[in-house]
Amino acid sequence: MPYAASRRAEFDWLRVVALGLMIVFHSALGFSSWPWLVSDTHRSVLLGKIVDFLWLWRVALVFVVSGAALMLALGRRSPAEIMRERLKRLAIPLAFGMVVIVPPQVYLERLQRGQFHGSYVDYLPHFADGIYPTGNLSWHHLWFIPYLLVLTAIALPLFTWAGTPARRRIFDPLMQVAIDRHLVWLMVVPLTVAHLSLRVQANDSHNVLFDGRGWMEFGTLFALGGMLARWPALLTAIQRQRYTALALGMMAYSAIRIEWPAASGNPATLPLDGALGWSFLSALNVLAWVLTVTGFVTRWLTRGSSALAYATEAALPVYILHQTLVVFAVYNLHDVDLPLGAKLFLTLSFSVLGSLALYAFVIRRSRWLGLLFGVKPSAAEAGRGQLAAGNQSLNAPGPPPVVFMGSPTAVASIEMGGRVSTDTPGR
Image (tube, rainbow, N blue to C red):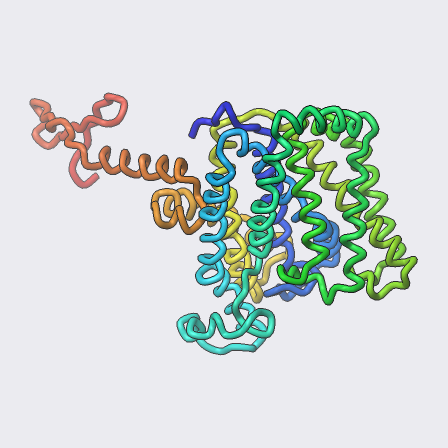
């Protein structure tokens, strides 16, 4: 698959890294000290620390990349075309995932916890009984897709308006001032308000309708992604500040865990002054790590390739599939006598390689499965073309056999590359 010259390779790399981090995060959960859908008999405190570190900011990158992708798409397509494509590539996979991909995860969770007894066929009539966690219907690892759809609908007219020549004449000088004075760090303010809102929000379970914290945080990051795509000078400035961002991220995370080790991501348990400090440092932690990863990835990974084109197209289907394979692996490795590191390696390998294999040999070669998994039509057409070419090659008539004089049992066949081989039957 050739890499399109019109694409921005640095953002494609950032997308692959963002979703890759999510896959690593989910693969580690079942072996960490954190409670999860299914878990192993051995739980690692060290993995729990790693999971805790990633949990605070890992999904933030997805919204940055999505905002950048939307801004770049506006240079090639109309807002109406973009919205139709986003609905097709996100809403359909979300619905399909809730009905087909997620139910096996809930089933295995219920089995391990003794909340259900029976086969998966027995469970299927109950997959939509109530809303998770008290019920069974859930979107699990696909929870962020509704946010992306709504933010896309909101941002499309705003990004279009900001990109008009008249507005560019206003915003370009202002953005240059923001770059010169490092004002991107002011985004910590809305992020602080977002975290502080948890004092009045029931929980942080990403309930779309009542998630003030989520909408403020993800909206801010989505806007940041749009600005990075619109103004390359801002991205260059972030690349220059990547080591500063790294230092700030390390200090912010350390301060949070040293000062409030039992806050558990909920400032409602703290007095107001403590809640303010926790919210500010949590916001700084998110922003600093987002800018760190963005700065390093877009600075070091800038070349497009056919492998990157393939990975970009495979990213969403692989992500949709991976957690079901992770849960399956953790559940079945539960009683296997292996070191924890080996189990983690097997789980991560099974989820990544299994998802890639299903994408390459099944999803990419079917129009309807491609639609259900959010595959772009161009990638699906390429996959079906490869399948058709393979079938034609298999069905093509070969040259007539050649019998060499003096050896009535020798049969020669023409192989690929024009070589001739002789062999005896049954060998």
